[in-house]
Length: 112
Image (cartoon, rainbow, N blue to C red):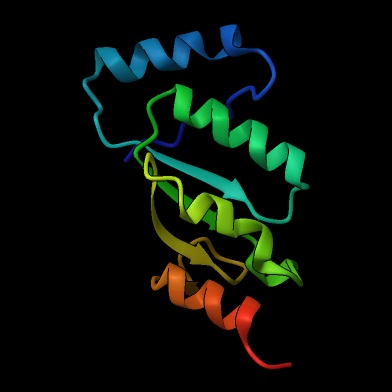
């Protein structure tokens, strides 16, 4: 596992050194970690930048801070990135939902 510097969602040229390193090291499975508390535009831009860098999987963090999880549905249906889990607590892997579709359905489609 490698924890890399943050990517730039607005300037792809800033991400070139990261892309070059990932390719040079032949890292083929790449996980994009996004803070779900970000606004929709920021999530969309960061998601696109991650795809451009060859991300293969997706993790959303900070779900404990997000009252409405519905904005995450679009990312679930993106075939390019497989969702690994949703982090719902203070620790990245402490409290998590690994049934991503089920968790989103429970939080957005449940009777209220």
